[in-house]
Length: 98
Image 1 (spheres, rainbow, N blue to C red):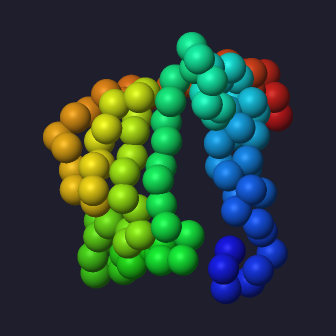
Image 2: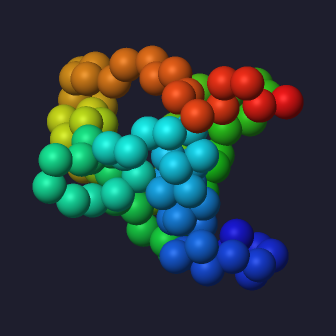
């Protein structure tokens, strides 16, 4: 996004959260509002970067400080908390589409 300059941060946020949740039928996700499941990433837009390689594919990205899954911190201050609140989700609106 930074390199090509073709998306704004707002466009990227919508594409990766609200639009994806709507497409897969997850009405309680992709937005921050009372009653919704809060999956939140706090990042520094100036320094966020994927640094994984083929040799080290699990290397965490830089510039990501905090991550909450269903409102539970799983990354705090750049360090894993050990919490594992996530669960697999199945799409509800794509069934029957070609």
